[in-house]
Length: 252
Image (cartoon, rainbow, N blue to C red; front, side, top):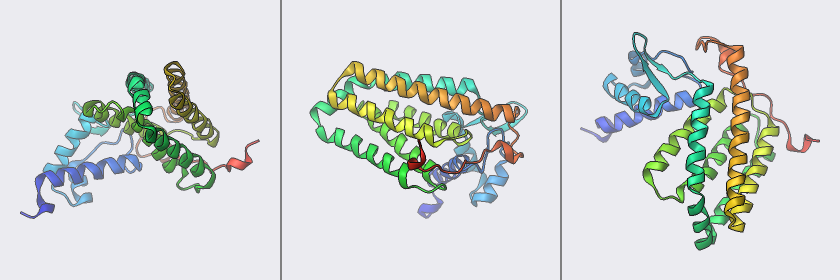
């Protein structure tokens, strides 16, 4: 058996393919999954597809509903609240380790600073077609660096799944450059607290950032759900469209 035919590799390939389709809105919330169709789409047999779906069910991106089969999980306000509550618990729990690492390894602060500089630069230069993706990538990386100081594989795995869920919520929200600029300033506040090795300042900066992220995501999701009370995967209007990019320099 060649490597490409390995059952484990095929499951991984199917898993990544389905997840990519979710994150690029090829598979939208509420859409029923037909295993045969996915098998044809990815040119992978049905067994690895089913195993990949089981993994995604565990992660909460896909759900199995009695008498309805397997569907892409719908977006709900409760799901958003639950996810953000979990993020608060993990990120605040990491605060002592974040400060310890910053104290013992100054290069850690340099890495956070570089990420923040890249984020700021991306908001100035990225085109309308990619600045959302770039911002999400750098934002996720920043928080993963913070949580990574725990050096706990299980927590990192859980947190990684939370990050994926946040991206899905973000995909269907109405995103504005103003919020990206606010988020950048919040990252700078977090970075400043890490530099100062100030626990209270860091906890307050993290909570403020997460509270603002939740409020913005909740507002956006409420608008999406209002426009499409039942998330019909066959309606283009329910998949959301990105607004045109706004120039950073145009902000008054």
